Image (spheres, rainbow over the protein chains, first blue to last red):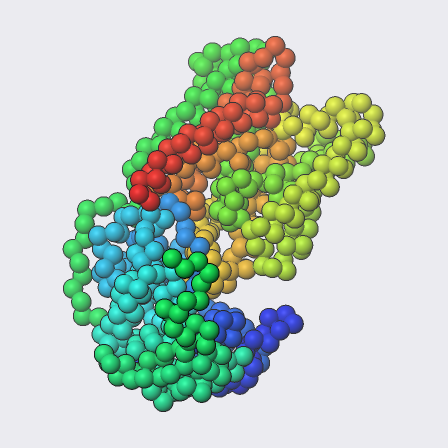
Length: 273
Length: 360
């Protein structure tokens, strides 16, 4: 079971976003893709899910190029949750999660027992059983994000690809979501690929880190090996110190203060009271 | 990677929780069928010669005299059936388009299909073609308008906004053509053209009704079968593709069905106002909360029946309720528009306090 990219080039009309990269997603692990804005992270994730056609090279699942797999078969192997999908109005959480069964359904075939079971499991897994009849547009941000994850879970795939799932969530809900992702990985062995912005969270939760910079892979591997002060400064343009996280030992990226603000108590403002 | 988790006990609920309950849909459909039957019988009874329901029933059983049979089967029945078909097709087209284009104000008028039909029909009339050719002209015009829409909107995968904008542009051009024809050609042609572009069921023949029925019988089941795709498309293109659905192809298919339904209706009765726009909203309101935008099979059926009732009912008023008979489109527009405004105002008022409660 492998998902890998080979000399993958992705471009929009007139602009190359990802330029001839090779990478492999370790099976059964959590991989985080990090990088500055507009570095091609989301584009890469979409290509790994097979929903955008590469302009060069290919993505392969178990050796088969994704472009050559029938869409529904691919959707039974890989689930993608885009960054902020439009929220349908007037449908319940369960009705939303049911749509995740689309790749398993055939033309005009009725809703099956297996479909209902997958939906029930997905709702239970994300703690949404109580909210199953609640309209999706009445959910809080954290609940809504869990509903989208439940939809991807109902798809019942080996691979779960999440594009910035923690954006727009407060710290508590970010952690809840990442813990849920970690549980999904340890309990059922799902391979997870996440695009994340927070380097500390990426280092804590991911087994494997891919740093993307200007359409190339700047580094890939375990967080402790990959995240160095030089790399962060080079990729994110942020001078920093890296310390071992006192709570779990993963690397902790601490940006340096720019010199004029070096001390928060310094009388830097105009109105001193 | 099998999960050995126990299935949670299933709570008592409807087939799809959070969707309108099926019994309500069933009851509504039965009630609407009843109303439709009443309206149809009324439309068969009323006219220059007023018949009693017993006499109309006599035509069915074959006991009526020749004159009554002629009036019912040759003059009134085709017109009534044309109303049923045009109303149902317009309602179906509106429901599909509103969800497909993510725009609650979408209808065949907005994307230029109705105007294409009008322009086709009016140009044919202006060219001196016999009245029997007009539906064919309308069908061609609607088809050409839809074709241009697809060709122009194709580049960005027929995305909602783009299709609506192109449709509005097309409508403007086609309206200009109709106006030009009405102003340039002799007054008799202009009058006929104006009658046609308002939407009229007057003088439909069995042949026209037969063709339209064929179209409706083919297209309505196709529309019902495509609803599942519509629900997935509602989640956005990326998610739809991730779920294994080629979004662009699905959208093209749905657009083709909607345009086909609209063109059928327009060829039969001209662009009858309001039905395609208003009926999907009414159907949602009747089907009950939580009123999803993506139509379910139930709301499409309710909408189809409602569209038929409104078209035949409005035609009944248009033909008998006023001092002089007027085209049916006049009635649907004058009665439908205020009703629609009231509905929008009421739903806005009903929703606002709930939103406030939610954010509090």
